[in-house]
View: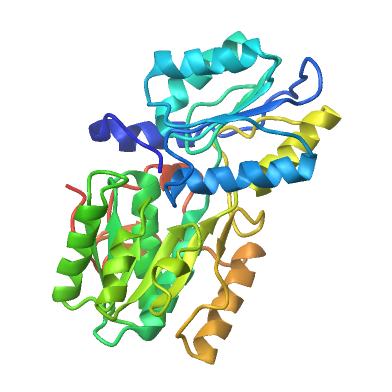
Length: 362
């Protein structure tokens, strides 16, 4: 998952940068696309990096070429720049990274190399030849929440999270809103690990939520540890980033899965045609296929499955928005009035939990 070093300023940062999304001038490469990936973690992590590597493998098969990668490159600007330069010196002209903390290095390198295309999955920096895409995960989490609400008996569901940044907060809020739509009065407990990958703590928090009455546990983390504990306790669960059904084969409802290739493959085709333009800090959802649910959802009734299918179709067609008003925060204030939709800037600036969520961002 994308990392942040300065959580205290993150909401203002995302709020400002989220307003800057825009298409830029067409990028002309010096030669045909030659692609390389830079990963923060290991491709075996089962989560964030694993999902990105799935896209790389699909791209290799699609374009019939070997696409190299490096793993475990830390969020240190100098180290990232050195890694980028190594690829550039070997003739690579499409550099794809995958974490917020690479943003400064990617921005600097993109400015220095205008005839190279840069993509930083989960970043927020942008430029004429730099795009920072992210999935509309809130679409998937709304439907996952609907599934959770449809099966819960205790009307208490849980969600294990990393850090309280906007793209996490919108997942929590969408999860609760979906559950509330399926089963009014359902509450969603949330706990933050303050890491993206701490299986021990994830398991402990999962167990604590189960002891407090949660009978569905969702993970928004890189590891499946939280849903493994739910499986052991005989509870339902929801996975994230990859299909996690193998980790909780009996109790898993669904997983919210990333398909980065749905953006990256068209991008490479556009680069080959000389028509690619950076979309800035872009969002891609059901319509583009970047985010999906594993289907059919397990353990739900036929009626609930039909509703989930219908809601997905409406979101894909742009006829339904999980954050269409009225949206009420925990303190009772109205964040989105009835009949209004949330702007992209407001999404990236989301710094509150909705009514029905039990937990705090502090």
